Image (cartoon, rainbow over all chains, first blue to last red; front, top):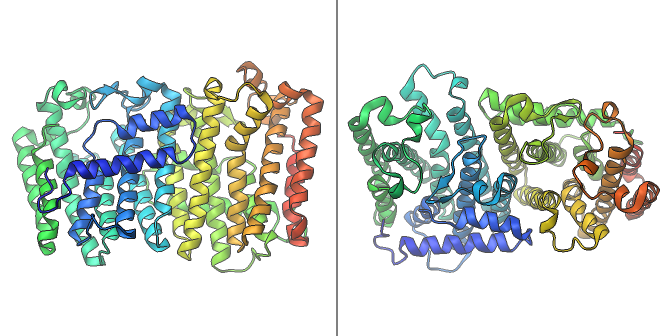
Length: 301
Length: 301
């Protein structure tokens, strides 16, 4: 997933994100043991998809990420904040009372490494720190807009996790595909949509542009989940960095389970095309964002 | 803890808080099962000390809580938000991996009632909803100020919980009383300080007034914890609505444990006096806030 016309490649954006996350964690005088668990979860191996999407969406609006200034600083804050919220969701999803996962990105999960109590607390601290970081953005209306996006997405993500964990509590469970799409639109899609919209806001998007970025992200988000389900079936744990075949073992509904392997592959391509179509009005500055979604469609882990 | 000169007594403020909390939970189309657990935790029996402190601090600045308007609406949002964050902290503190409490305010704790997974998720959702509510406050700089107070207090509270749960991780554990004060200044004090400062901000406090409210809250917060520790030793579970003698059983450091029963009582009175002294410049509008801290000093549960 190379950045196309920009000289800022994805590795540089990941490094910017990690620097901002590390600075935020270190700036608060948190107890060492807590900060260590937060760093482990938020700065470990990972694709940093959501922060990269923040930066690429801002670029699509014409923002120069090289330029110093408040818009570029707002991007750094948004990128770090969304990665911290993502890390929080992984920590809590992996807990024994939830998905009970021992392995994540090829390493022990946070509660395996630091104990369950510290994992709960590190997960609690990350979104508070993310909000604190966003609220320091200037000017205040941009800060409010970014933080509102993040907290609404967090609520959607939690709602999706509830649907995923308690499928019997979902009233529309009678229509498997529609129910599955709604769950993923919330559980995975909300943060990706938030990333694009935050990037758009940092880049000064008007309402029509924010709307187009939202349609892009909704399609890309569903595609991301279809690919995730496919990898769970077709990949091996060493490549994926986590246990595979977990969905079927847990009796969870998946895209390959509902529409078959080939059907899921076709659906992923269809969603990728739809995402790219939403960016038609953006021209060359959106090239890195287009490259990102194409790379996500092809990813092997 | 009657409201003194105001015709808005504490019961009316509790009802305003609960209405705002219920509206916030209902407004988001959250899954029913999640919303139910959130309501159980945030709207159950309780003293609503922090929301009451928001309102009384705003009154101390001269805000008329009867008047319609953005400042009064901001108070409602701040009161609801801080109670939601308080409820979140109780849900997660009570989890089996943390304090493992089955009883809270005379009822089963949230994880006993709804299961551990739902308790984790309800606890996660409440601060996101609290932030969302604050970020809708007008004007934007007030919203940012209120939300920044809340998230910093949340981080402090979590830091305090880490110190409480992992006392060996605290470097200054060699000085028991100082370490205990720091822990409580974070764990219990942060949200009370936040309540007073948010109320002050809603009432248009200048920096000196915010500073006085902070000193008030710091003394009141420590007093609150000393009284809490005293009640844990001297009360019975039926009156208190939760298990007693837990601190000693858990080997936790407490004020009565460090300074004896009588010493802790003297300390509580000293802190109450110091809190009242911080309000000297506020005159009659601060009478309800003074009455509140006096009531907290006398409380039996």
